[in-house]
Image (cartoon, rainbow, N blue to C red; front, side, top):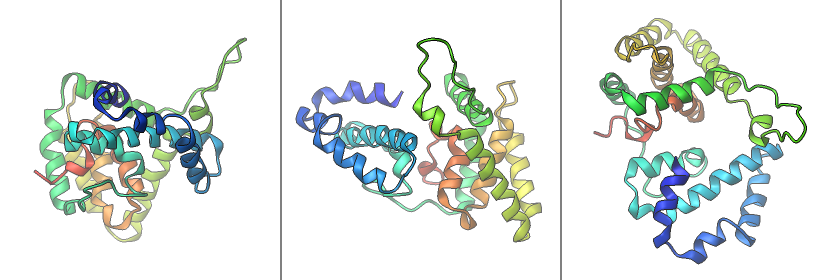
Length: 227
């Protein structure tokens, strides 16, 4: 969806700049920089693709609204803050905003939340062995569901260690109560997102963003508490 939106905007961008970040020397430079941080070649491939999308988003940033740009920039947000970065709102304001907007989820937006939640709750299937089948390099090297589960276990253990279990559970249950209960299966994920935000001050921010990811397109994390 991000790529399609960018394609519609890039017709007015500098074509030389577009080419620089999709082929040639600039791509090679970017790959080398990423390889210094990520030893896994499958992770490098995914990060390179994300960096190309982000570079193109920066080129057409004036055509994008802030939430749209934030969504495109998210893969690198914790490594290198985006242009115009503003610190996240206080935790209580973020949670209040989330609880306010969760009941408004419906239609295609809610279906997208459910689709992302499904990816984060199901381990990837093994690549097929039929003749000519080509396994996905991203699926082969990364496991979003395992990372999501590990991040949630970290939240629970941290809450127990610092004596926040009761308040943490209450926040989780409150979010689950206000989320849509219409069979799309996002109730539990709403609780996870709220729990992650509640523990934001004692967690690596990338863990918080991962736990919030199902709702990132509908309500960008960067927008929580800013309205």
